[in-house]
Image (cartoon, rainbow, N blue to C red):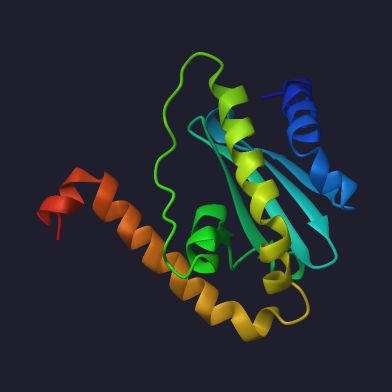
Length: 158
């Protein structure tokens, strides 16, 4: 993926996530990954938002910027946490026609709805919440895997 191929991604990020730029977020880092995937990190103060493509799926993660992004929590896991484990967002519907646009729209809509509730957890008090956030991320991932991975459902992989 050459740098010119990243330009449409950056245009899409600026378009769909304009509300983040309006709040003061800036592009902190842009990376080309293998197999045509990419990663863009937006940052404001200590809150980092990683918007990335993995095998064509576009997702978002949160992490303090100064932690080497080691402790990451997905947007869906944060929504699960904020809703007191009442809202579970599973796999997004596959839509091959305008797939990237639809994924950006869905992700931006969720992020815009929850961003003000999420960012305080990644500010100056992050250390206070870190273990609870990592625990909820693991719990969310376990539920996700149980629901969507057939081998895990049968438990025959253990």
